[in-house]
Image 1 (cartoon, rainbow, N blue to C red):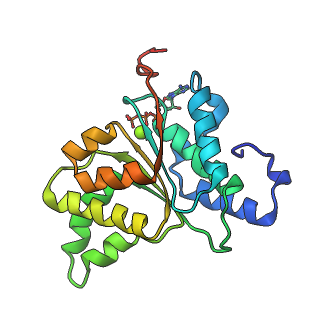
Image 2: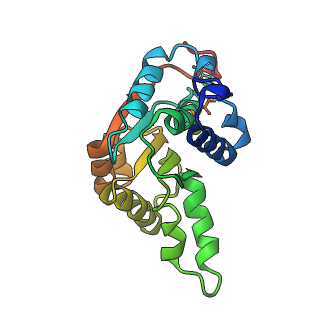
Image 3: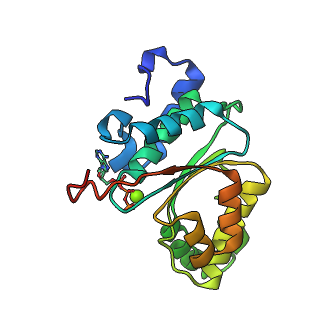
Length: 204
Ligand SMILES: Nc1ncnc2c1ncn2[C@@H]1O[C@H](COP(=O)(O)OP(=O)(O)OP(=O)(O)O)[C@@H](O)[C@H]1O
Ligand SMILES: [Mg+2]
């Protein structure tokens, strides 16, 4: 079940945070464990260290080629953070979001009467922990990049803990997305790099 502890070892707050994270994670990653990942001992340790340090406003950027366990690692780390991180507020909140999906769904949302773009984006401002999956997979229009900038810049300004996964290096983010987005990620993040070839395609 848990990131590292038996459920019976957790106090009520830890149990409720873990249940919160698990209920928000998509089914494919809900029950994911660190122990299922092969060849990523260093990266797992980096993620655990980041979560336990609980530095206010710190982010985790997990990067590497496709199919190598970034989302798996991020999902387990969100659960690990819920249990081991310095989460002090009783109503601690977690949100999972795919970067392309956020911006794709935004077009539908704002096209309906009475809906504001700010209301839409601000859903991603508030959670105590946001897992932004697959940064770089979204369309690269100015409008989409601005939306992403607003979310990440808010989370930077308000020191909100954020886990990001993506295929792009920080340098590529500056070139392909936006230099300010790259700047915020670089300043805030512990960067965890997975170098391996595709796990799914049999790489080691
Ligand atoms: N090192 C590994 N050991 C065991 N299973 C792995 C490993 N890497 C990936 N997997 C499995 O392969 C599948 C793909 O992993 P995951 O979705 O985390 O990849 P990703 O790096 O996020 O890919 P993408 O960039 O395409 O989103 C998952 O089912 C995951 O459990
Ligand atoms: Mg992924």
